[in-house]
Image 1 (spheres, rainbow, N blue to C red):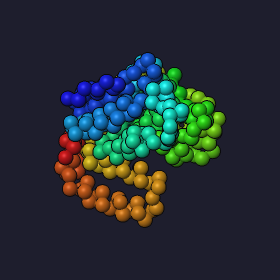
Image 2 (cartoon, rainbow, N blue to C red):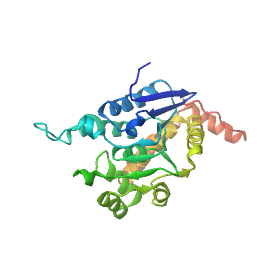
Image 3 (cartoon, rainbow, N blue to C red):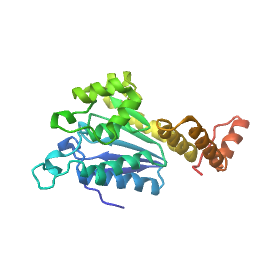
Image 4 (tube, helix red, strand yellow):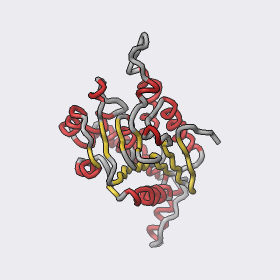
Length: 262
């Protein structure tokens, strides 16, 4: 098993929980942590996880890039966008392309790339005390990690503009109102609910859930006719699974289905 320095990964049945584990920086996404998150997501699927939870240790979910450790604008040839190619964009693509559902449990501050990771979950749970922040303007940069895409598609252009142009904290309750998160919970109930939902997803028809993920991501950027074609291909593949046969048998037999992910 891989030894991680900045994250933890725990397996409970078919659910893998990845915890960002640098509480002293509110889990700032250093280059090292970003690579480890990417590797852990891929490893979790390879190791048989059928649902994944991502959360943070301590008081924060993820406070954004580790500016002091990784970025030095005084270096010759400095390129503030280089890390997007090597670290942050690969992570966000890995999240988008996961074969299993992702639940993000936002336990505190989710800023910058941390906000993007949080909002890229399929189910986004937020503690009542958590908040979301896009403060790039305060350091003279533009949002990255897919922030504008995620915010504009979920909350609409004008709300996305407000959040990014003003750089103000968005409390969990308002994030729910804006459609950015799925549910807001008391802090002490967050992980219990995250695990309950992830366990339910992990017991579901894995290939069908993967198709649902793919459809939702593609629907934000694909025309209607292409979506119909995607549905056709995915329905063919889903119909060939043992889970589909079990689902039909369970429906006809008036009993709960037992899906195996095959």
